[in-house]
Length: 199
Image 1 (cartoon, rainbow, N blue to C red):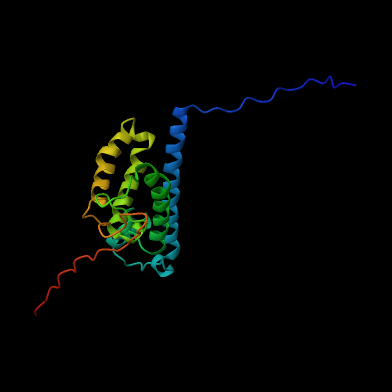
Image 2 (tube, rainbow, N blue to C red):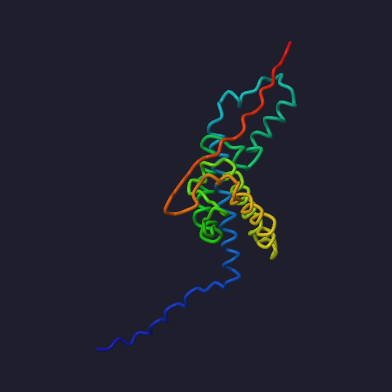
């Protein structure tokens, strides 16, 4: 006997327009950055000694203001201002962005006139410049940056960073110029001047 019960049609697949996908990608990137920053704050709060939370009753209001500013979070989100686990967490996020977005899109061919180092994370200048570029990317690819945000990021941030990082005398000057001959060397930085204090 054939089945005569009414059948319900399969639901239509959910479709998202391209414009909405861009908004979703931007929102996701912003949310991921906020989650990383919250993780950094939680790490810092968890590592503070308990004695810092108890203050003597006669402590000055200026000291309370300083403590309030410290409780609000780090003074800077810049990677060079972070230390320990907070630095490692931020570097991991930066590495994901560099390896999965930056290099596949903007990596270009490696040559003596445009060097690159696969161990870029061991070059402090490269870490600093790439992190600044990533922070700007998060800001200028957000929907709040407007339609010209990505163009501004390319012009004001990406082009300048690439010019400095991949310059023949940049931080990778002594590193890889050929995939068949990998090379990595961190160039020595000038030693700080020693000042002599006389009494």
